[in-house]
Each structure stands twice: as structure tokens, then as C-alpha cells.
Length: 360
Image 1 (cartoon, one colour):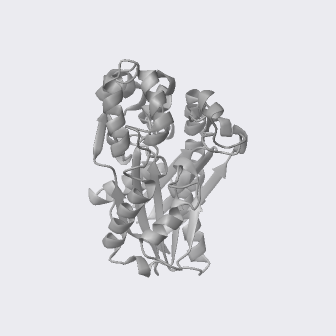
Image 2: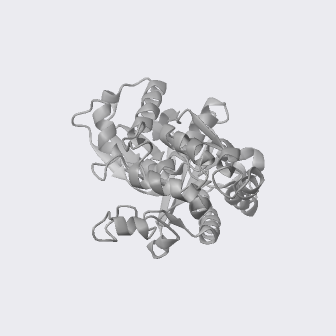
Image 3: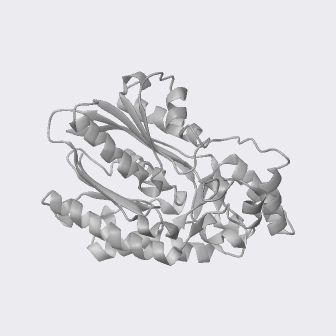
């Protein structure tokens, strides 16, 4: 079996609560908490400095436009990148597993917004770990990225290709949003962070039991971002910016309905494949998208609330990083113990979704 033998996480030091956001856009702590369950989130130092300035700006739309046009104080180089967070989480997971980067046979890394258009952060991470020939599998699976990465790693290991794989979900999403009323629907949700896990092939019954993955590409417009994509020619232009096509888009109602439906379906599929029921699972760790989604899924499946691990109120939606961050925290808190059945599930852009059952 392929066991998770080490976990790690990293988040930026900058904390943004709902009160700061309410000074930037037409919202309130009560409004955000009621609709999302989020009270605060971690963001890059650049986003934090920008929000402090935006909160004081008399014309917020004009200030936000100037940031996208010229950067902050005329500077456009980032003080933090997604690979910075990926590196911190990876180093902690490796240390937790008692390994060095050179002990790993492969990296599987999922990120939504990369450091560069190419190469992917997986390659950048490999370089920063001083790996010169270790393969890096690079995914852009959005919020379902870690579950997809874990499934891919497990299957490669079952085939005997690798013995130890580092799986990472890393995101620096806060830098792409409009924090005025125009972008409120997404800006209050998403945040930055990274989580990692080391998967090792070991004899015995403990490890990944099965993974179940799905994608419905006909619904991709429900959660998408053109940004620098080739949906326009050229991919980046002043007109694209002026027409507000650089901003990510989300149909909140569609995401909610599809997420709740597919979460319930894939959890049921995963349990049935292993001949177990809800009551047999010791810990459910779902993608921390929105507390309303998590509650709806929990109620629909009749999952006892004390078996659901949640941290969305502190970190917001960190997309591919949310499941490994939650897994690491639950493990560190002693909420995941040897012999436990742990079910991971996620839903994200694509729409893509999946679930993995682990005998810890």
C-alpha cells in the first residue's frame, strides 16, 4: 500500500479579516460569515499592502485600476510567489517524513496561477529543492488538484514506477482579484497557501485504498479565468484589460449546486467501492471552499459534524492547497490516528471533482 508518511503546510504571515475587506468594497463581516463561514484569510504581502492602501483610497475603482496598470508604487515584481509557498510546505512535509528532497522519486504539483506562464511551479519547485533529474508532474486542476495529484501518485506507485512521491497543492490566488465591488463575489473567498504530503510504498494494509476522479468540461464557464489565456489574441492586451476580461469569473449559484451534488455522489462512490459506510469513516476532510457547501454535503450524507474537519473560517478557500492544509492540521491535532479511515474529497474548476479513501 502507499501511505502518507509526512505532511506539511505553509501560509503567508499576512492576515486579512473581513473588516479590512469591508473598507475596500460594499460588504461586511456579517455578510461574509453568513454566506461563506470565512472570518479571515492569509494573503501575500503584496496583496496585504495593496488592501491597506485601497481601504484608504477615496476612489477605489480608480486605485484598483492603477494597480493593475502600473503595479503598487510603480513596482510590479512580487515579494512572494506560489513556488515560495510550495517550497516551505514541501520542506516541512519532507522533514516530517524524515526524508530529504533527494529521497523522493517524483513530484506531483498542482497550482492554479503559476510563477510563470511556463514552466509550471512543479518544475520551479524541483529546482529550488536542488533536484536535477527527478520528474515533476504538473497539474492545473484547481481546487481538486491535491486529490487528483494523490490519485496519480498512487497509481504510478502501484505500477512500480516510483516508491516515494511528494504531492503538493500550492496557490497564490489573492494577487489576481479585483477587491472593489466589481470583484467582490470571488475576492472575499480565495486566499493563499500550500500543503504537501509524502507518499511511500510500504507493505501492509495501511495506505490509499482507492481514488475516484471526474470532470464535466461542459460546465467550465461556471468557474473560469481568461487572464493571459489564448481565448484572446494576443493573450495580453490593453483592450482585454479595459473590457474587464482579465478578471476571474464565477457563477456562485451554479458552483454551489454542482459542488454539493458531485461531492455527495463521489463520496458515495468511494465508500461503495470499499464496502464501507459513512459511520465507518473516522475523519472527513473536504475542500474548504465555503462553509455552506460543506454543511450542505454533511447534512445530505448525514455525516456527524464532529467527524468533519474544517478550517475555512481561518484560511478561506486556498483551492488546491486546502485539502493538504486541513489534513496536516488534523494530523497535528491528533484527529487522524493510526488505523483510522480518512476520506478526502474536493470539487473545483473544470468542473473537476474526486475523492480518496485512506486507511491511516
